[in-house]
Amino acid sequence: MRWWNQMRRRVGVRLLAGTPTYDGIGGGRRSLAWQVGNPGAVAALAFAQNELRAKSRDLVRRNAWAAAGVEAFVSNAIGTGIKPQSMVMDNALREAIHSLWWDWCEEADAAGLTDFYGLQALACRAMLEGGECLVRLRYRRPEDGLPVGLQLQLLEPEHLPVTLNQELPSGNVIRAGIEFDRLGRRAAYHLYRSHPGDGALAPMSGTGGMDTVRVPASEVVHLFRPLRPGQIRGEPWLARALVKLNELDQYDDAELVRKKTAAMFAGFITRLSPEDNLMGEGLADANGAAMAGLEPGTMQILEPGEDVKFSQPADLGASYAEFLRMQFRAVAAAMGITYEMLTGDLTQVNYSSIRAGLLEFRRRCEAIQHNVIVHQLCRPIWRAWMEQAALEGALALPKFAENKRDYLSARWIPQGWQWVDPKKEFDAMLTAIRAGLLSRSEAISAFGYDAEDIDREIAADNQRADELGLVFDSDPRHDKTAGQPFCTAAGCPQGELQGSGE
Image (cartoon, rainbow, N blue to C red; front, side, top):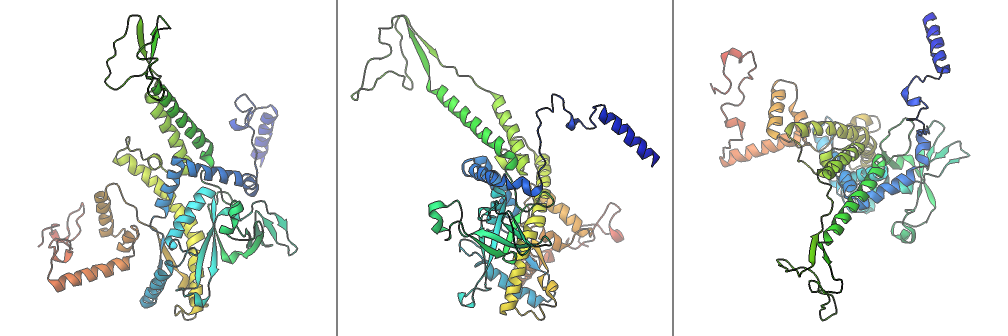
């Protein structure tokens, strides 16, 4: 305690003397213009979300790099879909669940434009571009003829008014369009009946104009990436790159116009007698247009006193490409993707560098897949689907209410990654499996497949080959070297040599 009091006195003396404890809090020339604010997680987006979203959408619409960055992340995070694998122990019931799920996936979209995995990609894209996406669970009647009476309606975040803040008589509060109960739980969402940006085209997206409707939170899935504790609305992923992308687009366009304008001036003719006609000047075609100029392959003989000076526009040289490359790296870092994914430029990479970059990106992507997309989007929809299937009797789930946790248990498998050098990756995976460090099921899941489906396909292929008397090199049952003891640096067990076939 004595030591702590002495330290406090010393620090207090230094603060009184005007010496900052951190460089960032100084009042010198470098920090004088650094004016900062510290709004809370809710207030920070309450005043900026609409403008950020509008600028983000504008860039994605008209800027090729912004659109490419969004597409790159969606294709990697979702791909062909993040698919569920039920963990129910009963094999027959598990197969029935998967079969019904695949039937329902085709009818999942309330708009009828895509399947469930297409909705995943659309929701992910909406989250990237607008910061968040709303998915409304629409329960259907039995006469609608769906495998399970549930469909999904995707809504853009503009349907949720960020300016709606009220204190309700029930004790609930509305913040940024979301109603919270006294315990801080989400109770409802107050949604516009139609998109506020449609204007005169509002009847195409709904009716009701700017009226809001209260939708229980149990019927809404809110997808966004939380960046701060207490955050309730999402931030567009382009927020940190908006200014740079806009300025970079203008700079590149200005450079293109400058080069185009400079290229239009082939040369400049000077003459001693201004009244003389040079190089056909003064002649005109049938329409009256002047016929001065040069044609490809022209050899022009100049008259005495004539001189031609050709245009030599300034060239930025190698600095232009390097400047753009550095700016694109900053944009890629702001978007959470690699420079190569943003631009498609692979001129300065090799196997090691691109693999290191992909590994870092895939760690980030997996975190978003499991912590955001699976947790906020996939699991709530799976839960609602299972409950509706049990309620309708589409699945025979005895004592569903008592064993709900077991029935709802599922594993979500994203699409597998494609490696730069598959042979090296497969050899490493095979070594891990044989060493007992990795299971076949886990290895198969890494490529986005279900191990049970793969095993059934292999068994069916082997049975068909046996019935037809076919022998393939790919069938390890006919390979004498298959199944030999695994050799390590210490040698092979019992003196056997790997691949001897003995």
